[in-house]
Image 1 (spheres, one colour):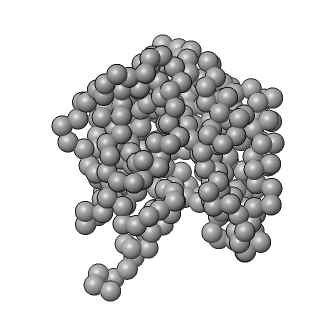
Image 2: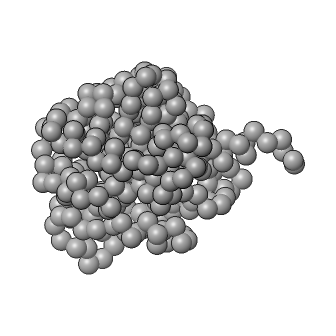
Length: 287
């Protein structure tokens, strides 16, 4: 359960931190499962339906950038996503009726881990209301050196930042970001961060010799349903499952207007989209 102080921080700043929520034995089991998933995967030969490889490595390089949907494909992570201790932290933030939305593991390998630019999660998957929370679990000690999460605090849902250029979704904030307001969230392995889906966040390149693996899970209120804007929605909804309380009999709609993410092309991940956006921004106009 969250303390009153943690609840107050979430309501005022759009996130809160829960040190030590995940135990040492469970962390060790997760590390072992990640090693098993990654065994035999190389940049030249890997299962692209389950993992994404770091691009800046030779063909036989084994550095994984992301593991897709661990809480769908692997029982250990699925069990954790439905654990009473975790859901007891999510419930006060979005209500008693909860759907699991999606999951991933961002790996941030030593000296190569990719940058994640400023963005708001909900801009990727518009829902009928704001009750969506992202849960990040540090699987390794995280600090500025290995690219810990950074957030810009503010009341949940107070601001929708632009993520488009020329009418096309870029997967990153396209207006100037006041990084002087950014707060780096350092924490030991086992720390859990609960963040509203509209809290701006980012992370830098891992320049250290250490891993910074992070399990990321998303939950939404059962009556926060997706706005359909294309086949990507149907694909992502395959991973949604009801995990607590009652199944919604109707959608709760609190928006009158919300930006539609029109993608420039089919993309596999946030990394892919942000890299494409950076490359397009560097091209001379008219080229």
